[in-house]
Length: 264
Image 1: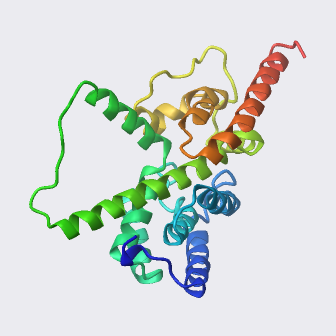
Image 2 (image 1 turned 45 degrees about the vertical axis):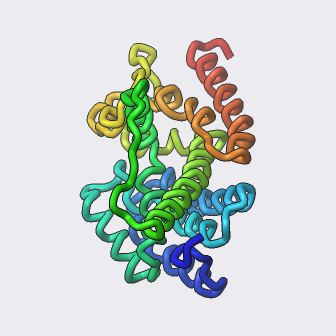
């Protein structure tokens, strides 16, 4: 652990949490209840638990907590100007929370890479690289700089895994169902239309296309995203929790379709 990523005193972290809470509540004031403060609070609590279960160093656990608190601050689904939202977050990390450059790298990376569309982009990249044996090496950097950069990258991945799993858990199970229905209502989507099939093999660009998403149904969102989440979990504790929540969604969908067809 580099000095730049070491844990802050408990009092400093508590102040940062309070400051981040107040700031993000202003940033998401217009969000509906599927992505509101209570969603953030649940994700933050889950991130704390997952960080402890994964044995993250205290400094990284603190950054995971902050990333969870701030992860909705530049959600593409609600943003009118993603670049401006990113700039505002960077300014807040620097001037509001007084994080080091390395800490900012970790928090920003986790937030920017935690979404489902980024997962789709990673899958596309992996498919494109299959069969390639190209090796990537840092050239011209001193050993000390390389070691620090490697430590930051490792911290980024650990914090990202915790944030992703915490956020994904809130997207499935009973709460996930409620959030999905709320989100669909917020954007005036049709609840279900048997003639509209779920999209297959979505790319990042297709998933982020708001106009195309508006033509989809709320029930299709389960098939396009929510039922895939169990297989994307990255932490052991997250995978265990996802099993039961996934099963609950399957039961809900089975019952939904029976009632839709007048069979129950």
